[in-house]
Length: 280
Image 1: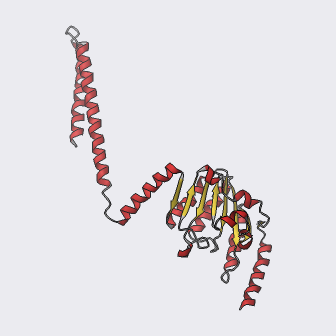
Image 2 (image 1 turned 30 degrees about the vertical axis):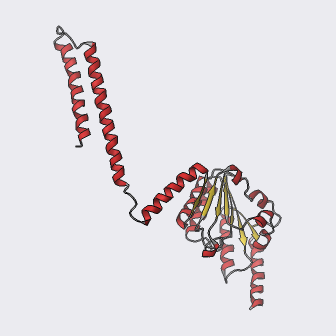
Image 3 (image 1 turned 180 degrees about the horizontal axis):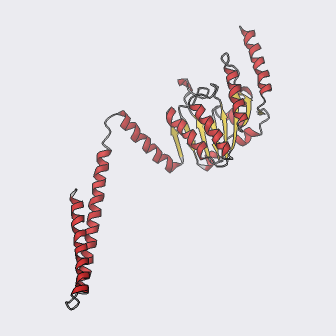
């Protein structure tokens, strides 16, 4: 038992003894003079002071325990963790944060779609069939549809694909379309003509409830996204003026955007196959 607990215990015992004494005096010795009001007030102050002292000492002990549980950084992991916590605090203040690794980026995407209440709109450049972490994002999208969230996703069709890669993307699009996601597509060459993307780099991005904007800012020189399997760096902002600059209202009315029809894409795949054979 710690010293503050001992002090608290002793004063509690004293208080109980005093109350018992008062009760017994009134019950069995009514002719004796009871405690005066001044004495009662002093007793109450004494008990209250003991309680405050006990709480103060207990809080001090809790603080010491926390200090022991959070030692000064001893390795790079500790420093990175403390840096991450600092960035979260700064992000909460500025309503803008960048997650700079794969795990944090995927977590931000999953939590954003999990928090969506009305709409989730996404422009996706990913082409690997939505496996691994991207499968989790797809499952979260289906869960959002079940919550009556309007999920709209536009896939970017690239000018070139590795053998069999386009068929995998078509299959992923068909699966999402069948599960209630509003699936659209656009050719990359046509998307680059859109006014927004003439001024800004083509990147995967998502808009949540028209209030949060998430942009895949993975460095292209590392071979990561935009076309990789999932983002390794994601910028999130909920500053109204920044969110208002999103391209989705322009994108959804863009003439080159087309709703998913598997037959249309299979026809396009045949054209790609012919072009590939002609270049060999």
